[in-house]
Image (cartoon, rainbow, N blue to C red):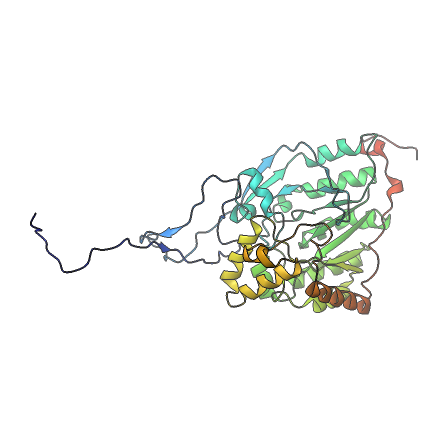
Amino acid sequence: MHDPFPSDDPAPGPVPEVRVPLRAIRGRGAATALAHRFARDQREVFDDGWGEVGVPADAPAPQATTVHFETARSALCANDSPDVGFEYSVNPYRGCEHGCIYCYARPTHSYLNLSPGLDFETQIIAKHNVAELLRRELARPGHAVRGLCIGSATDCYQPVERELRLTRAVIEVLRDARHPFYLITKSSGVERDLDLLAPLAARRLAAAYVTITTLDPVLARRLEPRAAAPHRRLRTIRALAEAGVPVGVSVAPQIPFINEDMEQVLEAAADAGARSAFYTVLRLPWELDPLFREWLALHYPQRAQRVMARVQDLHGIGGAQRAAGRSYDSHFATRMRGSGLWADLLRQRFAAACRRLGLDRERQALDASQYRPALARGQGCLF
């Protein structure tokens, strides 16, 4: 058959898709809504050439925060992990608007059919009945007083707490029951509750930890985009200490070749009034591994390979496991502090700095003898 449109050009092959380059989203830690591990479909964004009318093609869409209310079934979460220093935790929120890219709680959003990426920091679940449940659970005659931590998974003073005041309600229940507790945060919002925390601390019923990952404000904004600035967290340590609340500093997580100022953070925290300190190394369970690699490719592409190789060293990943891209070992004995040469060097740096600064004291001991179930029920108590 005669070709009415002859051509000397070879037959065209398939046109490759044009991938949308990764771009940071202002105020967010994750750059994508990474599919969670239970999702049936995996999708990748590609450029169809249209962009958006009136908007630059490379401008990331704004990401609003949505709060969903959940009727929780329990307030106390029991913990039997031998490497965690408390037996109970209370987390008034699921998801966290601080958007810390390294947060080990991100994969828990997968159980909600939500992305551990952008959904974790934009779809916040608030347990509206958490204080009522906690009062009921503490009032049970069989409740045994154990170490209790508020905010162990997601920050109990993230921005939505200003309006919902769920953390404050939890502290009021613990106060009424005379139940000792620790809290951990990287928000200056904890200062609002000094009227509760200071009297409790005076009775050895409360202590606090403030996380400061780095003093570098540029790095902090990339790592923890909606958390308080480092200098503001130092001011919070000072405010807690001056109010008589025993306060420690968490310099976690330590990320090789990223936050390299551990000693400077410890020195600044000690100067502000911190009395103790602890650290962990970066952990990358489940979807957190590809999320963190995505973040590295976006912000530190030149050193990304070196960072990941050292993270694998810290977790004893080598040989076939390293070749397969594995980056994390969840074994209780080593997951928090790592193992091997680099973990030992990090441990020595931390110990030396803490000895020099007087931060090598034991965690503040709280008084469990004051707890009374009757007080949790709202009844009077003769003892």
